[in-house]
Length: 328
Ligand code: TRP
Image (tube, rainbow, N blue to C red; front, side, top):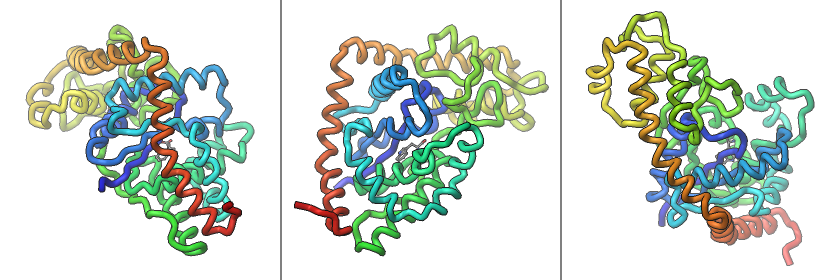
């Protein structure tokens, strides 16, 4: 039997090339080797206020984009988290075995509380819900970016604590990151990872940006004070542009060295822009086709939820029995 892989992405902001090269491209690649479940985690999104109409639109946009970039509903279950109520149900039961201290230590929680004026209880519970996503389906492998490794460790700790209190119930998810995607930095600030929540026109390239916008953003990207590309002394901005080029074209290190050494930055940026446009255009074309049929995305999401529901119900039933809750 194939091992189960599970991952999640929040339907906030627009997915960008950093999300694609760092995670989503890998999701599409590994779906053939695993029994894969990919979740659009709308319940995580609302831990911070979201405009309702906008959130609704973003969920469908993200689902369409995931299909366009190669998530194949024949091989993967694409699921909107809130449409399978067992995510929230299991999260409550896990909340009851999670010491508050574990949650207060989470660095992402601490960072977010510094940004927000009013902090919801949901923000503290965020990693418990993430543990529920994973443990609900007894997932073996959870591909995430390095900013999520602490949450994954917590999911393991919660599983372990539950198992020792109530008996073996959960599969221990592996914290191993299956493959390393490229870590793409902000175009305007190459010391920071490209982020959906950072605003500013020059920061990220959205997967739906038209070619002219992509070119414009890349032409304005931060470089360094060298006159031309020098792989040995380049700064983070130039290194980031080359990473983007290499991740999209899968060019070898040798060919990067040969092709780019000595190239002036204007020309470097043009070449990167053409590689990005060439990779995104077919994806955007598929996105338009997929979303032109208004019922298609909804149908895929309904099928995804239906397919994973038996496993979700099975786990919740087990947990209820283990804890002594009423199971008629
Ligand atoms: N917290 C993850 C992120 O921001 C998203 C997420 C939610 C997730 N549930 C998950 C990732 C379960 C992996 C598994 O990237």
